[in-house]
Length: 327
Image 1: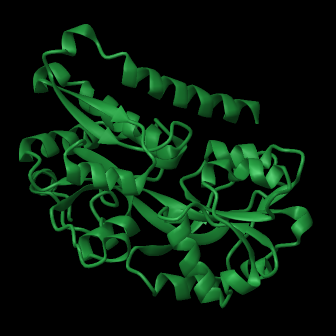
Image 2: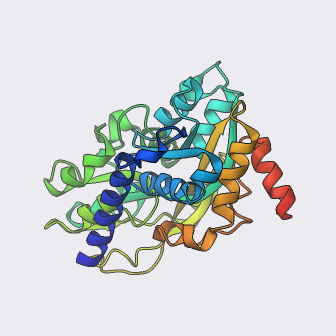
């Protein structure tokens, strides 16, 4: 466990260092910003990996990519649309809603958004205390459940999950809406019995929850329930959580769940050449990119060109076309 924690902490600290230690000779270069997530999350590591690939040719490109921490998908979409960032990382469900004018963007579709690459899959993760006797999702009835703060992906996805389960949050739960990044502390302090977290694995916050004195486990979802959920939305897919990095979990069997693809995205007015270079720098260094985080290990050129929910940017299409990759 120490090795996993050390790896996660080293990755977060190195990524943060790279944001702030911009070389002196890059001052005259064009700055390209990518919005990511909290420094303990996989989004931040992903942004660092994207920037690392691009910045290998920063002198040739005359541009320097900076990884910017954020509150996640919603903030990233709004800042790309607002022009503060040229690129961002988001869960596919947020991009789907923004493009179609649904949810937080009701009647205000954001048709200028464009996809760049599909990334790793984020898994719906239900973490529960052993003493709460939650062995299936339906066992949540009557329990203390955290679903994330309003406006977050966890909050939105949790609402869909509970509706399909037939659980009324107002009547059947002791509900809390705290930010998910503090849920690991809440479950260890016995303030909650369980929480939802849609995240790539391994994740430092999940490691913290599992490493405490209060024993916890990850609850599997039933196959029929997974199929029912996957049929509801085009961005939901059946997946499994690889728990081999979580040494303190007694069971090392993959946990069946629902996944949501994370997507690197931009705006339609970001230059074709810039987007082309971003895609090319990742694809031509894919082995190195995959080594930047365990969540990237199953990425291939083919699955990174599919399932991106919104239209591809012409710069991405151009690379896939030249490389002979179907999209």
